[in-house]
Length: 203
Image (cartoon, rainbow, N blue to C red):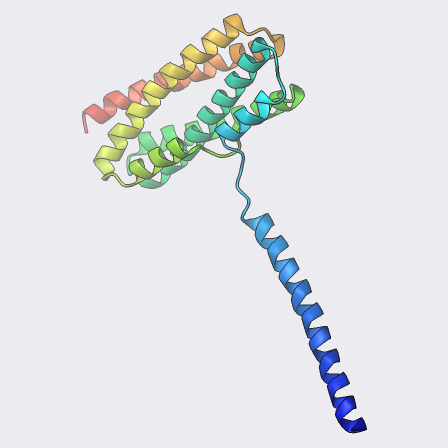
């Protein structure tokens, strides 16, 4: 009986220790999964966060502008990277490289400004931008080149209009100054994209 009792005690200890080890491992894995599966902040989430911070319409408008500007930067960076990978034409690769580099720099300045104003901005493209990327990536080389360059022309026309409005109307001096400082670069991007667009028409 004593031997059986000892065996039972030993078995229970083994089960208990195993449970503790397994439980700890499971917790550790769950924690790791949580950290690695987390996604960035999308535009919609940033807007929701800003809605909870600002009550005045002018502050909400400033926040909306920075969110939109961030969305533009994120999309231009990703599409610029895609152009460098997918196109075989030097002019389009160079356009994509310029877009990636310039909008990365612009995003850095925007994030600093947003942090100063406690405005949440997206760090990840929204679903519409991801869908645009996927559709462009699925196109043939010739169709990709034309559609990408057309997007750069149209997109920068819209961006310039957005930044001009903010530069003239924003209630925040820092945001107004930043928007104004970005306009020459955006206009240069548009001019470059138009030149490449004309080249694509001859391909």
